[in-house]
Image: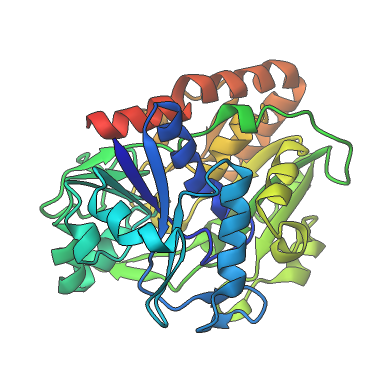
Length: 380
């Protein structure tokens, strides 16, 4: 089959964003399908240096080309500039490729459906931001109508649809899925660096303002991080976080430093997919929280970033969102609800690190292997 995977590799040309999408292409390709990458967001390009919208997409296009060539898809990508309706990449073939596609995999809702993509027979919508995706479509009728045009719906919220989950599903039946991982791309040896002994993560202080639903506020990672801000005082481990300053640049940097955290600027240390992978692989393990909305909604969200840590054989102690109802917990990946529980589980991992490292990689093989996950999407 011809499968078109849509994404935001050029729109957000930094950090780990490329991994969120390229591993779908790798998974479908390994299954034997003809795979294309499409970037058609309906938004003007985002300039990574100026940090603003622009009509000039040349930097975005150059990054997409670099990523596609690096992973063997140098002649199978299409980028559409919303500002002037110009195609890049396989531009002469764009309309034909899309018109003859069998499946559209709209990862994180990145593709704005046009006539040519709306006519693709099988369209899969993949939600990577449970609760916020559903509230966003609930707020805008036109978005709801577009969403109803898909064949099947998947979400990283593994608990969505359960009676104790607060994510509003409306008319849609959301199926659980996880980030596919191309395991061979993460089985690399670590190299000594400044954070080889550290528990690390990559996050944004707050990606966008909180949303209200049925009288309750659903917020961002800042709300959950503050509950764990004293973690360095409860553990002898070192904690290094590549943390964006977030909307409004409200990250309390000096206070975090004072409490024992090492804070790195993501745009400096993780400028692209290669440096992002290096950061994860060269870390000791991951400790991380989730967005408050994921936790408060009991969504079961499971992180695409954590999936990469595990594939690299890096254990993870991550916040409980309801995901442990659906995936095994306790070996290689451990969940926590309180700061005290986080400190205890970090100690457990450090005391038997080799066992947890081996278990982390086995978890990835069992549950995250890209061909397996991608095949499940096709089978429904």
